[in-house]
Image 1 (cartoon, rainbow, N blue to C red):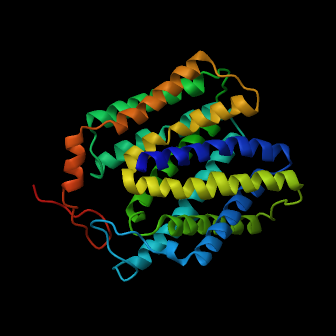
Image 2: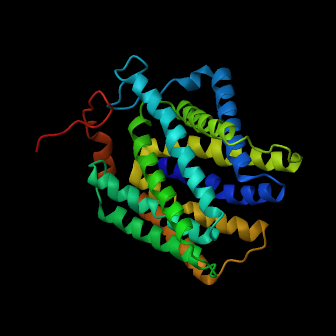
Image 3: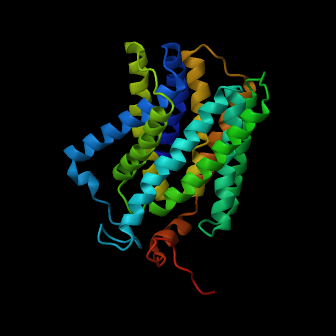
Length: 323
């Protein structure tokens, strides 16, 4: 289920660019889009948690502290809020600032350096192993994403925009790595609600300090914002955290490269943009990375299932093992 959840999340995130373009056509500004997106998502998740108390309880997980009585639970809540207030709010702001300065295809190409950054950082931190299969999947996903995005052609380069885009990639890398430290200690719905609340708080404060945002757009604008909040934020975040919990940061990042493939395909279907042969080859490469990650010897799967869970310290990190 882990890879499938990551792919669902990538598809939901991939639809956001289409919803965003339609929202802009309806008169929604970038500032209003971000503020309404996170505020509405936080409200929706909070409502669901109030109506379904059972969703607040974490599922049992090997090696993870159980329940709110575990040491450092307050720090876990603070980290979850910080993921939204600092990480997600900053990444979204950098992304949409870059989008004003450069072509969306080149922006997406720079942003999707983050799977490489996540994998390298996770290996350096000792959280993941760079196996042959993962290396092949990483190369296939990165190469396929490159072909999908460059297949559109006609991209322009803007230095400040490129710096902002790379800043968004670095920020998202840190976001995923930090999220991986708390994803086992909070239910996906609770974690998503805290992240959305943190991001909404930061963007709300910024709106107050900068004179507010214009919310006077018409009903179509609100409809597309609702699509962004429900499909491309709430559903996308819940499935991402649930997938991250089951796959780990490297695999989740690699599978997330399916997002630009979805964006390109939806643009072709809804906005009349055509897919070139180069883009089709790129999409096939990205999909092949999913197959590579899925195909593992049965014996290795059994070993993974039967292996004892690593000991964890009070922070929830794997404890050091003497060699």
